[in-house]
Image (tube, rainbow, N blue to C red; front, side, top):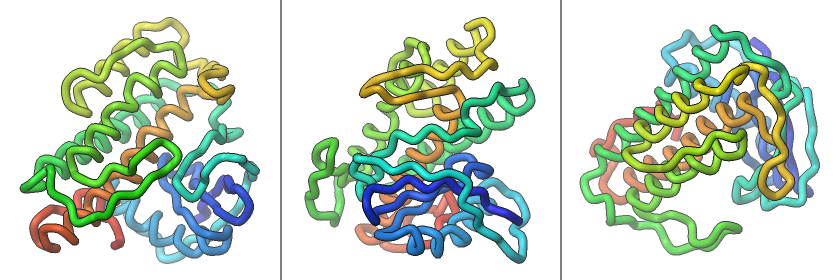
Length: 235
């Protein structure tokens, strides 16, 4: 099976995205380091989806984006060439279902953590401020991109309710707009280009970043058998 990858980098720091596995990604200090991690990420991703895992995976770089952003902290602004194409209704529904599964699984992981204010992680600053340390901080940060992501494609929504509820409400408002499947490219905040396909990818990508961090923190803080590995992370 081929993994079609988009490589975004700042110097050597790299993020590698699988554009045919929406939201799957790896990071590394070099492109080769990110490439080496990709097969394990795809196997984990397919287990999470409930799909069969192939015996062999072949990585192909199909797009490159040199960035001035803080790639080492997962800052990103790339728009894939594939993310400029219109969607069919069946393709949209399949991607939306996966985005909502990601939100619900994130909520399940969060709810399973016994003390949402406890963490063994040290404080650390990133480009967006202090990195979330506790389960509560990670959950709030992840949930609260809802209005930002939808807003970048012209959908006005809030972050009220849990992560699944506010995301579902965003999709309902999106679908009330005529011709939303045209996948118009918008010039949003910070001169970044956005499309519906990109928003769908970014939701899963962002969920996976912070779900992995939350799971690893929980294992270190509470023990390996306390919280379920809902996302099937290979950690």
